[in-house]
Image (tube, rainbow, N blue to C red):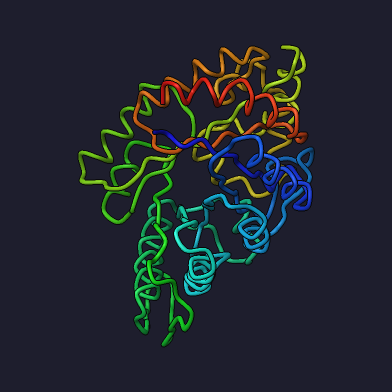
Length: 321
């Protein structure tokens, strides 16, 4: 049965309010949660960017939900530190934590002052980070000299069972590449034909483990309000790679998205006041074979969305999932 989770968007919501939201989501019937991990929001209108790893400790303690996070080791984060963070949460909350690893975006990584590498270099760097993290979680002492450098690192606190390391991808080629190393795959909502190609590429290349999907939605009691929420909060997120990878700041995203038409926003966010339409969209993702679907309401106010989907959407999905 597909697990339906709540996505905690640190770029949009103060961490205290986000903690209240995920506690409420559990009570409303959501089965899991996942978290973004940003240093910068995508837009000045979003206006937040709490530290995900501090928040995850609080959220795991405050709920009984399993949690995941999407992280980019290699520049802003040293892989040994990420291994320590994963290991500590895994040790404290056995079986409840996973981490998805990707190559990242310049808007978060440029803060180190280092240059933003080409995509192929970022992929090679991530692959090295994955090997370092796995070895540390396995209890090995690690030294490594490459695109990342590690000197005699060892994790003294580790979980009995290492948490899953999920591959983050938005393209078919990246999904196929993730099959080399990942314990599962995560992507974001897209046309079903594209999602099917990604799943097939991952599985055909030997990819193992669960399939995760993050779904951007905008719901409000009135259609005009749902559209206004999506346009205000998510129009800076409509750009395909490499633009979304390479822009540096929230101000840059705001500048390039100033004239984005509503039709473009509707291509990346499922927007409707009709909960039945949301059920239909989500049923299509379930039929594709996703094991866990995290719902991200792109508005900054979460309670009405949580209550409505908990009462009117999740029960219907569970009869078919």
